[in-house]
View (cartoon, rainbow, N blue to C red):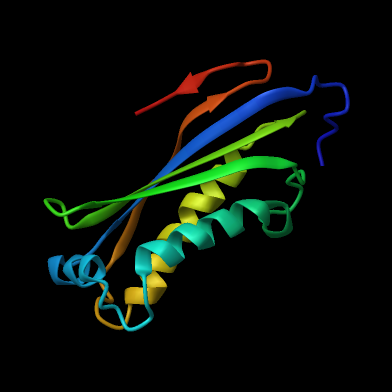
Length: 144
C-alpha cells in the first residue's frame, strides 16, 4: 500500500457513472416491478452502497476508508433502453474515494445484470468512469 500518513486529512468525494443497456422489454419489466428476483433498482442501489463499504476487501492495496456517505442514483432511460447509474461517495480522510465510487457503480450495474439475465442475456455494461472528484492536493477533477 502507498504510505499516505504524510497527507492531510481533508473532506473528499467522488462520483462515478456506469450505464447498462438492455432490450426495451427488459427495461419495461424493471419499471413495472415484475422481475422474478424482485425490485431490481432498489436491490441494485443497496448492492452499490454495500460494495462501496467493502472496496478495500475487494481491491488489493486499496486503503480502508471511513466512508461518511454513499448515494446511488439509478435513472431509467427509456429512449436508449438503459439504466444510468451515478454513485457518489464521501469521506474525511488522507486519500480519495474514487475506487469506492467506481466499485459502487460497477456492482449496481452487475446486480441489474444478475437480476435480469434470465430474460436478457445481451445486456451490456458500459462507460464505467469517474466523472468528478473533489478534495486532496489536486482538488477538483471533472469529466463528462
